[in-house]
Amino acid sequence: MVTSELAKLVQYAATRTEITAEDVAAVVAKTKKDPIYELTNAVMERKTGQALFMMASLLESGLFPPQILAAFHNQLQKMILARNFLDQTGIDVTRMDFDAFRNQTLPKLISYEDALNRNYREWQGGMEPPDRHTRKISTGKASDIGRIKDAEVRLMKQGQNPYPVFLLLKRVQVFSMERLIQWMHLLGEADDRLKSGALDGRAVLEYVVIAMCTEDVGTKHPKEGRAR
Image 1 (cartoon, rainbow, N blue to C red):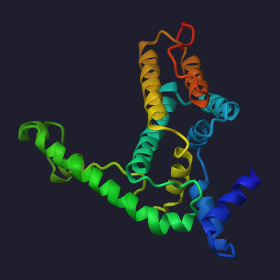
Image 2 (cartoon, rainbow, N blue to C red; image 1 turned 45 degrees about the vertical axis):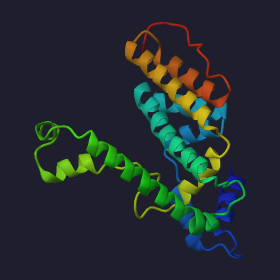
Image 3 (cartoon, rainbow, N blue to C red; image 1 turned 60 degrees about the horizontal axis):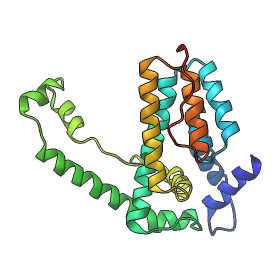
């Protein structure tokens, strides 16, 4: 654990010969994980035992299986966006340090996201519902309608430290888009089983974790039983 955190500091400092207190504060602040993040991070790193432990801890703390599955889904969406960026640009971040990412790759990522969201807005404009429908799904306030139209997909909010995005791209580098899409189908199937109530929620989550941490994303499913 200590070695891992030191490695993050070295990556963050990049070519600088000294690590400052500000560096430590930035890395600690941006890598201080909540339990959900720890779980999804363990899955991304294929640490099956750690992931199952974190999953059990979350269930014991009172979280429900659908909440945990939603966290997987949100993280996977980010991974797919990151993987598509790498595929579209041909960028390899395997040996890249944080300074190079911030100065060279981050501007390209922002441009990529700008273009993606611009294309989505243009498509959305062509599929825009009648005004009466727009009013129906909002409160009628201009600000509310604006939030519906201006929703964007980004890996990093404006003003946030880009270091977590740097780490995400590093991890995503080892996963193919095909694998990520298989995981998305896996989560969809798991969601259907949770909603049906025919399967034990813990068993469904355990299957998801094990399947994502290994190469098994086939059609096997946990045994049916009473839902919890």
